[in-house]
Length: 163
Image (tube, rainbow, N blue to C red; front, side):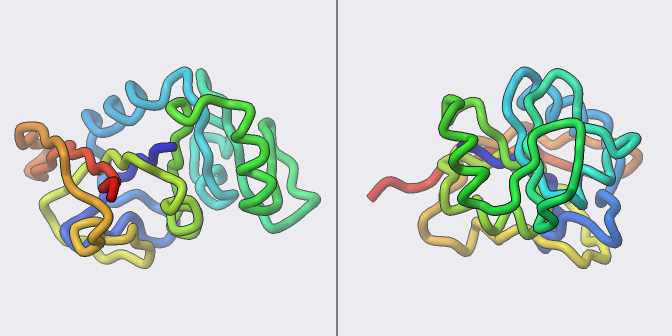
């Protein structure tokens, strides 16, 4: 299982249901990594997508604590139910895409994380765990630095250390 996220310098991921910044290259990167794959997200993340609808070209799984929540995709009411559903897919095909609570709950099951690091600090009320401070993760790849509207960013990949 993998996760994909864009973070600021403080590992912030958003504020009041909004992304940190609109970087077309990052959106294209996200699409290239997740198209044709299984994506797992929380209800709040689903509701921030265009039209509050699942992303096309992917198998969408949404977690909601509300057993009556309805969406145009699979809805699970617990981490355990989501993991059970995910067992029907290849682990390499599954991407955790947010938000904060979903990342925290599923990070222990991930072995790779694709992190777009935005070289700026934003006001954030949601964060991703700082992988640089976690001994079981190491950065394995990084792209050259890109820039959009004055914002610098870099695509990185972290892998879980195997002891």
